[in-house]
Length: 323
Image (cartoon, helix red, strand yellow):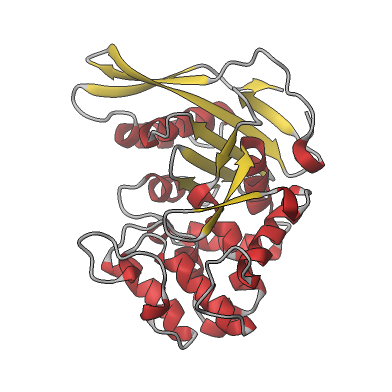
């Protein structure tokens, strides 16, 4: 199956989705249904489990693509943010002092005050810099300053910044921008409704090394995985242990996307009920089947993300199948 403009065509029937089971002392207690797809940068569905045309909002897995405007506009160079600044622009971070400091540096480099941020102040926090999306918002504002676009309305869907983001995503997908459904994410920024295979295609482009802006962003994420999420979090742990071979970026409501660096292959994962624990389990399951990680690395990650406690363990049933 090849994904063309509009991603038309019907997938072959009869490829079951994956099932993640929570076992308590080896006895099933809960289960999650999960779709997964592998695409190459030409839009070909290589392997899948479940429905590659499953629609969902990409949520925070969109961040590397939102950050392309920050790079392409020259704002990243103007702020002299370096790889750390690019990593925080792509981050769903833990809100630590180190994370907030990197977001502040983006604003400082663009001569902007943190009061310009329109992401919420998290409960118990004192500044919007502590919000997990503050790096993205800081990069948005720096881009607007560079391009002389309005600062007050930077989150509106008709703002030149957000129009440019959708345009760039549409170009990567090979579809008209008007076909993309836009909604509001929890941080206030627009997010996009995409097919799961489209998410995988975006991440195939992210790791392919053929788009300079994306290559620069992926390299920064891999150089500073601690900024992309945080200690003990899946994206940070995976990218750190994969030794620069796999880019990982999750999103809320069970979205997880992966990219194999230098090979032009991307993975999209969607948990139907939105459970984070299930998307992490499936990501490791898919990575094992694809052979992108060593057995030792998979075992180490499994201890953190499959073994949830003395009595609790996650188990994945099913396999990706060639399309």
